[in-house]
Image 1: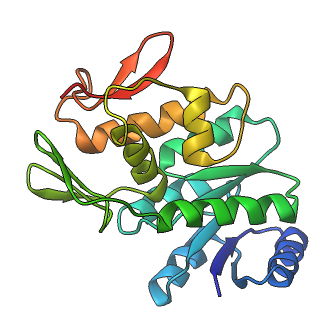
Image 2 (image 1 turned 120 degrees about the vertical axis):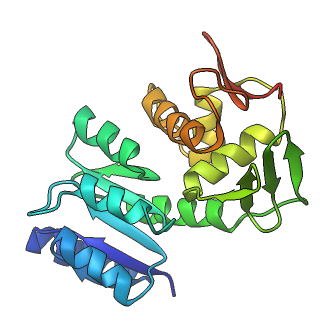
Length: 224
């Protein structure tokens, strides 16, 4: 059974989502605050975290940032409708995806299944590109001999781009291939993930060697 850590301070919203997720077959561990969520992850593992942005004490952004220091568990942010600040802030903090409120349980179910599918996928043996080594079988990435800690969505993005070196992918293509849903105009989702990925695998993010921007078109892997 997939275990979901549901972090939501509003009792009605939390109870409604918990009931809906349980009916869909998930195990649910509810938390009312950011502090409680971090403690819950220390006490026991979760397969995915559904994290509200607006929380008392530590907000969702800070919880996600702290979580990313020690865990690669997928994080789906719950954000206010049409609030760009929430969306961009969550992605920059390390979230893998987001869902706007009010939350439709079937939509959340689809997003959870999508991030878990991306996490579970593996492929061919290790590939070496200069200092960067991508092991598709173990899903381990190393740069200059050191393992790089990537979130599931960052790893999926790297696997898609490196799977077709030098091919230019539009943001729309990457949304479909990496996130598995079609957001018209949601280029910020791709751009925020690219920025985070570059910070982890590039020696100089101002002159990226691996994830390159093709102005007016999108991104490509290499040349390296």
